[in-house]
Amino acid sequence: MSEGGIEIEEKGKGIGWSGIEDISLLNTLKAFPKETSVRWEKIAAAVPGRSKAECVKRVSELKDFWSSKATKEG
Image (cartoon, rainbow, N blue to C red; front, side, top):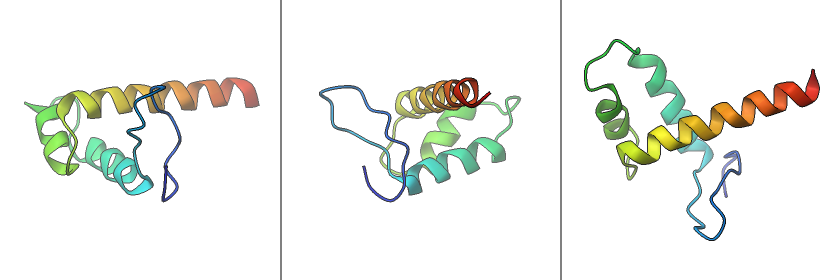
């Protein structure tokens, strides 16, 4: 993975997220609150080359990563 992305990938897939994609995803999450209609479609449209399913999965991976990191540090 390049450009500072957090390395969380499915083994054997080799399709990682770049740091720029992660930042774009996180900024877009802030721009479209949970109440937004068709939220995930809008989020995916703002992250070029990524589908709704990939964005949902990535957010889940990042949440898991940060919660496990907080547990280890706490």
